[in-house]
Image 1 (cartoon, rainbow, N blue to C red):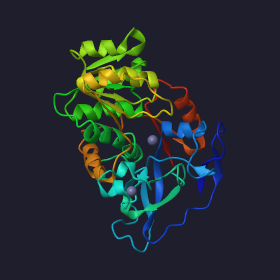
Image 2 (image 1 turned 180 degrees about the horizontal axis):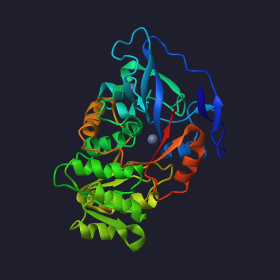
Image 3 (image 1 turned 90 degrees about the vertical axis):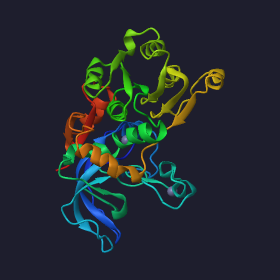
Image 4 (image 1 turned 135 degrees about the vertical axis):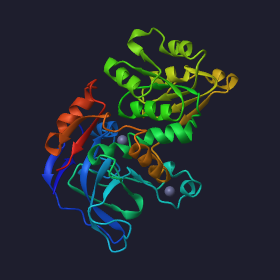
Length: 342
Ligand SMILES: [Zn+2]
Ligand SMILES: [Zn+2]
């Protein structure tokens, strides 16, 4: 089969012929239809090590159809459209047993611990994937796997947004814009912050009640506090930039919550006294637990959460490096790019 293989950092992916993966009795072989290009893949391309040493097939935001089923799999049939979540939790560790599967200590991520979805086929456990209803477009539906599920966990489980809450989302890329629409659906009045007017425009279409271009603001946190009469109940940082995380923290009201969704390996500086006096909470949010996927898929099925509008660019496997180049350049019209696997 054809696959885009990652060999070493700062080098383009190589399009190669590799063997179709073998599947075990409790696994299915999926013919990949769509696989999202995520900023996490860019981190690997730039040198963040993957758990499986290269060569590795990246890609962890996958949809497709069942091609073969292992002998012990009875829930799927050939041709079923399916969604593959990025991370499989072990169900046995302390965190899995206490309902915190997103921080499972034995988690396996496709396109990181093992080969991923920038390929024609992938073999995955039948117990960890989900059937997609016909109302969900198969290629664009791939982004449910990460770009929509990650905001769901951040908004619903970590922030516990309630109707009428005020929220700000810093960063309107693929995950950020979906945080805007997810927080809106959950009932929050959302302020969207970015530096690209194109993205802010889309944020408005997805429900943001206010938008702020950070480039136009001397003190963006102050502007958010002004717009929200003293600060927001919840601030989401979806970039992974220390300075932005600090701005998000300073955008919260007394008793507010900062949710860190973006990844950075760097330290952040936030005022501890303010955290104590104002009872501000700071929480991380990582991925999404398998138990939430059926609910998220239904939100897309019934049109509460949009996917087609978010997939602005499509690339074939042969063009995949062009896609990552655009993503790396922060192309303002690119919200989520998906590799279409023929
Ligand atoms: Zn991702
Ligand atoms: Zn676990």
